[in-house]
Amino acid sequence: MRIYTRPERREIQRYMRKTKNTVLQRKYQVIFLHMEGYTNTDIADIVALNRKTVGIYISQFIAGGVEGLIPKKPPGRPGFLTKEQKQTLYITITLVCWIYLIASI
Image 1 (spheres, rainbow, N blue to C red):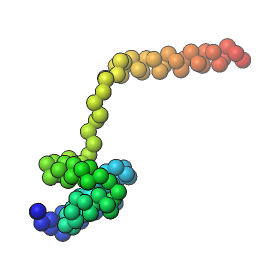
Image 2 (image 1 turned 180 degrees about the horizontal axis):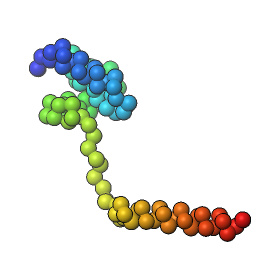
Image 3 (image 1 turned 90 degrees about the horizontal axis):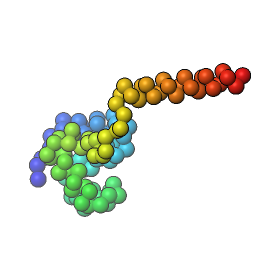
């Protein structure tokens, strides 16, 4: 197991305090405990996660550093409308609503 320096541990603590994302905060906590020398089983018990999940977080950190912990954009079907089409649709709906509102007065 790699020995982590005090500045490395402080950096993870800083990330842990700075983020408002609870998932990332938990990942940073897992990494901090790993840096402190806890086993994956102990970490899983402390943060109430599955041992395999703890292992995945640690592997992501080892492979990509702090950036490796940040969730990627989930895969999925791309949107139907372009940015311009969305903007046109928004303007059209807004105008129709205003026209309807004025007509009902």
